Length: 411
Image (cartoon, rainbow, N blue to C red; front, side):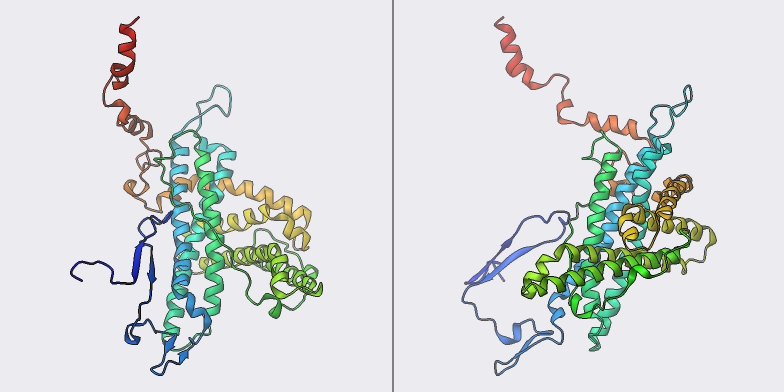
């Protein structure tokens, strides 16, 4: 302890910054011929008895306890990263004016262009949705952890599967959304935007899928009739997920029938499993957002968030229309209605767009963005920022005296 040097046989070090999580201190530890006394072992769940007998943990999922915690937190982190990017992009889109909607009229805010709204408003809606999902996952983790402390491990597999799936689902969407926000304000400096972490997603397979799924005639169920009814849209997402899960299970059994072992069959249907996992997570997200609306008592806030929920559900259908058509959940005319309704909702969201990102309440110091300033004084501060460039420390760059001036003297 006096020198803080590792003991003999202990190899320890840092593995460098973690992309998107610089504040997390990750390292490596290697023990070479080091005997760890039993009383110093970490034995909260798995144990080694005094006679050397190994006691397995009550659930094999407990091995992933820390990982489950991180996965649960990443869902909320994805929401924060995407909401910061949306704040910058929407604020700047309200400041910047360009072109003419009508000849002779003043240049409008680029946020008034439907194409800009179509880029940004679905991401804004998604940021709000992921906020609610992040809160849900945090509460779920603490609730199930409390149950585990009381000896109840029954909900651990659900936490493990849901945290793995939603981590992948939300982080992948957030990463793509951040890039979309960057493209939405085009040539301006992205280095100052700092619109959040570039989060990458991994996919959780549907554990024991084919041992639990029973074939059902999903496509024969009634189709959704009212695209403005959120409860019916939730059911549509449920049917889509069930259809893809059933298809994945069916294809897995086919691969097993081709004399393949379980591992080969699993790998041969991994694309189907990933699609099914994503559809299930999408259903969970829509369902939880819809359920959250019932907790909101303020009428004005409820109306705004209901619009966001409807937009999220309909936009997801428009982007995955093939799944809903193939399963017979929605008809072709209804898909056309969905596309039209999405465009109508863009106009409904437009008056509240800036207020909705302001409601995230990110200080300028957190956004660290010239473009996303709360006061809207973008160009004044951009000029001040540009003047701080090292190239502007002197009016004449030192390279002139070092290279050009000697060359001129020889002419």
